[in-house]
Image (tube, rainbow, N blue to C red; front, side, top):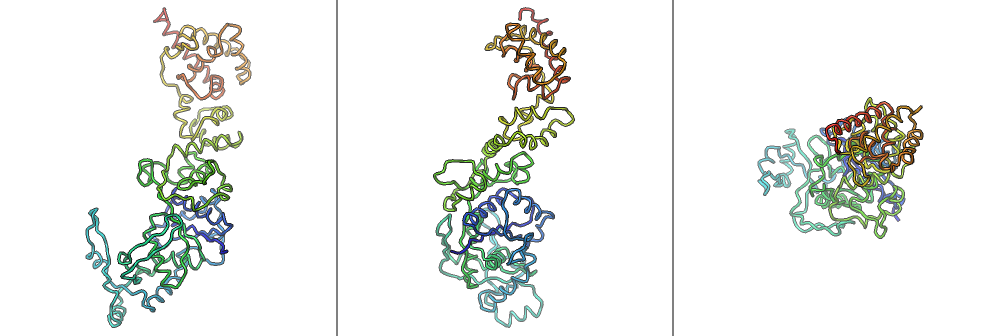
Length: 492
């Protein structure tokens, strides 16, 4: 059996987009499931779009996700170079060979003449269709143009009739009419290969057996196969992946939120959660109903026959759910280490207890983006009214809440330390001593500390996070709100 060889061939044009990363993941899984090789190739022939540092981003992203490549620009290999701009001497000989065999031709048409052939499409945009003007130039006309130094591209001669059919492992058999295929450019006037041409040459020379890419390339695949046929080579197997859409049904873009791997990590999504979620964007593991898979588990169960034809929907809420599962599975130490940069940024110069914060958040949070909503009260309380202390279920009234806070404030002021065990025991002892239920003991201080009825964590945890000075300041502010209220509402 032929060893599977797949390649991930990104262009260094910026950050790693979610769609690119999913392609990398599926490409890696398709090869590694069969113990094949995963090759990294950098396609940088479009020099105008190249972004400084983008290649390093590609390396860092693949490494972070565990998608180790067997061959590539940084690790070498037997069929390098693995950067297209370093392979320019590989392409022209093949193009010239096709010209010599009558399968391609030099096209001297200027940009202006091509634009003059443009027709207006149904969307109001100009459609550029080439009329094959140079396809049948005489040898004398070609020589005259060359002697005059006229720039030219090399185009492939596409068949003018019949059909081209190929088999895709996801979408099945695809057939197109050859008359719909334009004579594609192989080499541009600057000597650089076009994307399609370079792909075919590189994939063949690198022994790629499976080409994995987005379904938007389905319409280009007949061109690839006709080029393989012209060169006398066996085409690879194709695996076209479904589009990724936003929840609004439109192609995923920045308007939906963070769409690059780096942005998602900076927002607090764990790499393992991102990879796990991306695996399910267009694939399902058959009869296995689990949703949580490690990369190694994905490698064992991934089967390209289970890739869907339908577009996948990137749902940030679902990604957040995945993130929560991985957060809850972390050790307490790992969670604290991961949480600290986000909580430091959130609290700024304000002191806080990381241990207690981590304790109350690990089972509750999905991403640090929830900090303002969940923890905003820790930075400052919003104004609140004394009526907030009314609680029929706990039989709390502003008057009883004031009585409880008076006692608790005096008690806390006299404690020798503000450690969790000390504070907890002191407050819990009040219940039996005063005939108060636990909810009555803990309810008023939580409201005074937070300015709200519902909080992640109770009064003790909030005090431990805030510290003694800030806690006492807030408790006394609540005490004053209640005192002012009762002064104006003596019957409350």
